[in-house]
Length: 119
Image (cartoon, rainbow, N blue to C red):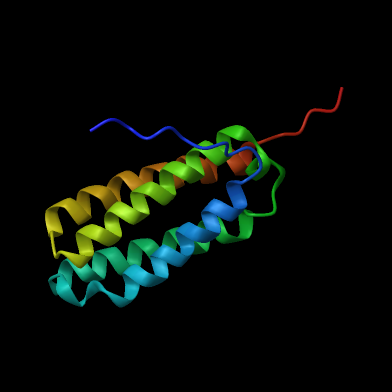
């Protein structure tokens, strides 16, 4: 299956992250199909990541092309996670959760360390 081309994401980082947070809320309600341990891990990880990224949506870096690309990737991973939770595939859900966590951690770090240079 060929990878779909990424749309123009310039300046769309905040909107894509908001969409990702909406997917997180949908996943939170569907965790009943997973075991108690996996559901707890998914819920706690998504809640922690949402708390980390939500205050950063208004930062300057979020409007850049790179932030838009990472936000698009995060949204796609969140959709994959939602599908894995819906079909109760715990192994795939936890693997996707790890990838999503890594992407969001990287985005959080970049946003916090981004410096606007006006020279």
